[in-house]
Amino acid sequence: MVPVLRVSDVARSLAWYRDNLGFEADPMPANAPHEYCLLRRDRTELLLRRAHAPIARTADAYDWDVCIRLEGGELIALLDHARRRTPLVRGPEIMPAGHVEFELEDPDRHRVCVAERLTDTTGIPPAV
Image 1 (cartoon, rainbow, N blue to C red):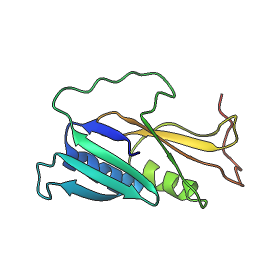
Image 2 (cartoon, rainbow, N blue to C red):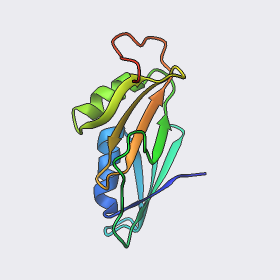
Image 3 (cartoon, rainbow, N blue to C red):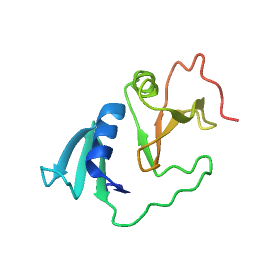
């Protein structure tokens, strides 16, 4: 199963996911304007599909559209990379189940949660 996010501009969104979260992009058609794009990062895949109507969002905390679970201790490096390029919506914070999460928003305001269970959580506050 691959999550689908409807976006207003596939080229803009694929660049955001590539530049901020390290995804590789395979847009279709190859030349813009793209109708959709398959994004891949490790074992995670997302599909971006061009929306033909405005996209509505809520402002609720923890109202994310997709959660990307990492493995291998990559979260802190990805967090540092992402926060230099785009504002964080939430976190990082240690969740009650023990994993660390942070959230950001893509250009269409989709909330993206990035999570990983880390052995060293020094300096990361617990979720409130």
